[in-house]
Each structure stands twice: as C-alpha cells, then as structure tokens.
Image 1 (tube, rainbow, N blue to C red):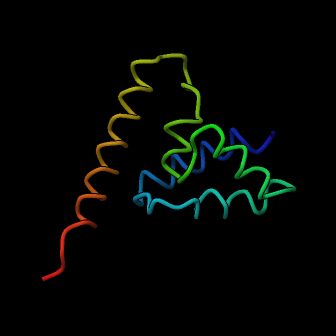
Image 2 (image 1 turned 180 degrees about the vertical axis):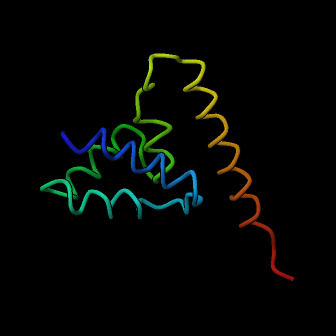
Length: 94
C-alpha cells in the first residue's frame, strides 16, 4: 500500500485548511489517482475506523514519530472540532 503514507500527508495538509465534511471526499479524490482499486482501499480504511477523512487520520494513521501523547492530542483536537461541527449542524434553522 504505497499510497497510505501519501494519503496521511495529503489529509493532514488539507484538513489544516478545510473542515472535515464527514465524508471520504478528500480521501477518495486522492486515492482515485494513486491506487488501483478505490473501493478496496476505502473498505480497508473503513475496517480500521476510517469512515470520513478526519477519521482516517484519527483511527488509521499511526503516530508519525512514536510520540503517543502528541498523536493523542492531535486526535483529541480533531474530535472536538468534529463534535462542534456536528452540534452546529443539529441546531434548527430560524
């Protein structure tokens, strides 16, 4: 899976500038050019907890430097952001 490290870099860079929209849009776009079987790759990520772009980083990406505290902090920050977006989406329109 030569595409995996590149995917993590790509998502990390993109999600620093755009919010996760709870889809695999960024992942699928990246993988459509990089791997042979897109559906197989998306299934592989989903089996490891990657059901949207940010979850690919949270659940599938290993700590990049072995520092579990740093990785946990990054994951926690992304979870908080996702929860805030989810709460905003649930508010009724006036």
